[in-house]
Image 1 (spheres, one colour):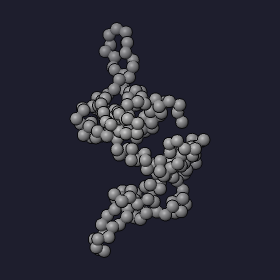
Image 2 (cartoon, one colour):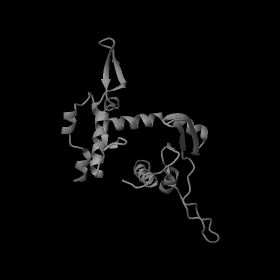
Image 3 (cartoon, helix red, strand yellow):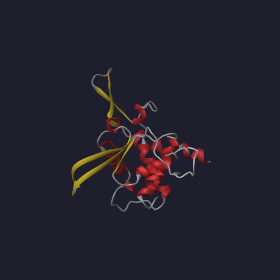
Image 4 (cartoon, helix red, strand yellow):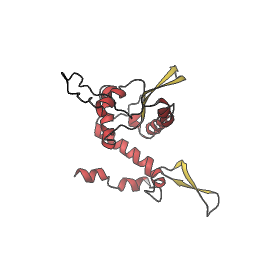
Length: 198
């Protein structure tokens, strides 16, 4: 857990670096939070020394090829008036084509997460006092979302029976499972992380 949004952004970027060691993935962030500074701190490079005089600039700089955009929402109370985007790194046309000019997908993901996991809901008393319990609750929520819960957008028509739909989970769509798991069945499985930690 971090005290400031900038510390949280730096922690998120350091976690992302495990999966993207050489360069950051394309991303969009809100207008505050210090994500561009965290990008430079995590993936930035110090300019090479030219070999003459005293080396003055030792600060990290962004690297060519990054794709990062800021999204600012202008509201009046709870009503959204306008969404402004500003491409910080990368070609503006290419970045906007790749990421879009909105945050609808990630906000839908956050809403689903808040509905399934009370520990990440806003303005509730159902918070976690210990970080390991929050991580365990989030891991269970991800497992249920991917292995137990069928998604309407992933359903598939079954031709042999006629116009009947086969309900599918994300794990089934990815070819990792042949049927939706039951929650009791999922809870009996031993997480791989526990095996690796011993």
